Image (cartoon, rainbow, N blue to C red; front, side, top):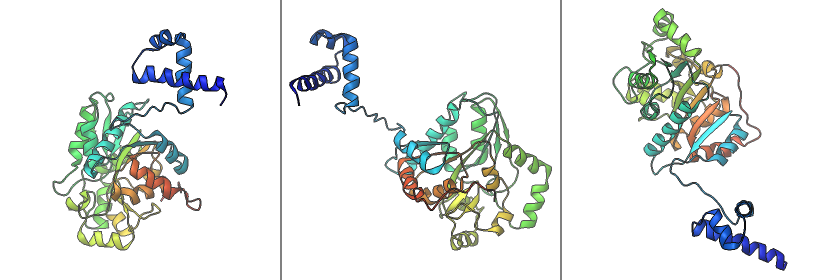
Length: 327
């Protein structure tokens, strides 16, 4: 290094120490070193560019912008929201739900109609959405509800989201899964159900969480999914569900029989939505998040950094790509 280069390097170091370690203003640093404030500002920028200074945001809810950019580039998503993982899955789920609530509130064009699924994540989201996040939104139930009380009650979620926007609610008066295809078909023909489903299909935003196949899942605990159904899904290679529709690793339905017994939006509705936003967190959702993104069932994904890292690694295979086709 030349004498001139050594002097400049020493000056950069001195400016940084005075400003960042001793907390002097740029004007005070300039007075101390006989520099103008403009020169100090240029030196501080140069120090960042040279790697002498690194600025790191360590707030527990800070977004991981590098992971977001990588995930969008690899997946074809239009946007990814990635936040830090917490010490356990419940805390991570709540952090991700809060990020999804903030995303919803920050949309530049507020939805007039919002279709939503239900479950624990969506319950956390509804609790986190800020007051007056939008104005007079019609919140529509996207898939059938519980057959008995359980976590993630759709009525509470929809009511909370609507109340916080001084909006209105539209409920889907049917279970998520019924006992026979004939009963499901008859219910879907009922005007009170058909009209709700059509309103959900045409919603400005479709917001849904992804579910895993487990004994602890909301669909199992609510009684919608019988033990025989769960065994069938596992045998067929299901990795989880989106709006109550069970997917294989490629994001396709695994059980035509169960599809015929289900009431609510289906995968083709996700593919054709104006803006489909999926929310997923935790290791149990890795596979279903991959299926959702690989198929193109969402335009936006809100998730945690561990799930994002998994997706980036698995979606990077050049022999695999999204299929944005209807079911």
